Length: 227
Image 1 (cartoon, rainbow, N blue to C red):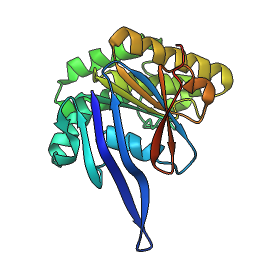
Image 2: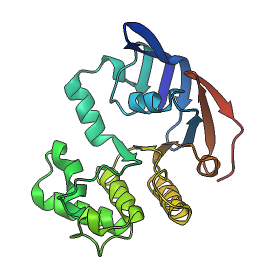
Image 3: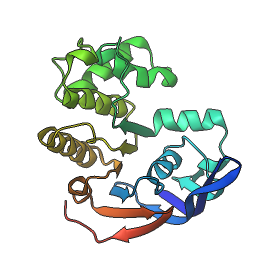
Image 4: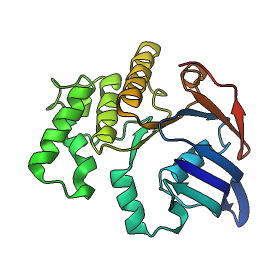
């Protein structure tokens, strides 16, 4: 469970403070599917970075399963990201010189899993996203939808409790968008993940159990939607 209490994040630009999040109080239960929407610059990416233990709040408290992320050292945060949290990005972030299987294996490097198990787990993760026949393909040999499936497999291979997706359909056409959202919904249900998706796409957001809106760094809730 995520628990945020009066969380603020302020950056400095040209010597002046620029608030990205302001006194955010938020609870996200284990196993929820939450969509985060809002205008560009409203704080969505900042919130996701804090939830993903990629940054710390300027003030306030953010806990994941009781652990205070703001008080953790860098090695503890690295371990948290390596074992508890999976990330999916709009631009896929695949390494172009590595095969699909090798890209997925990179997520296990910080966990000290031996090479044999890394290969087997990467293969299983790719099979779970219907890419078992593309293990040796480079990203350039895959479609956009297939590249995003590799990215999802890379996130899932760590067997995380939380999956964070930042505009996961932003670079895809409408048909492929539906396939990727359907895949995310399937892994959310089958694995009991907490799924948090930042999106500009209202169609994607309406698939979530719960919708959060960010405006000028402040949180409000939208009416729940049926999945």
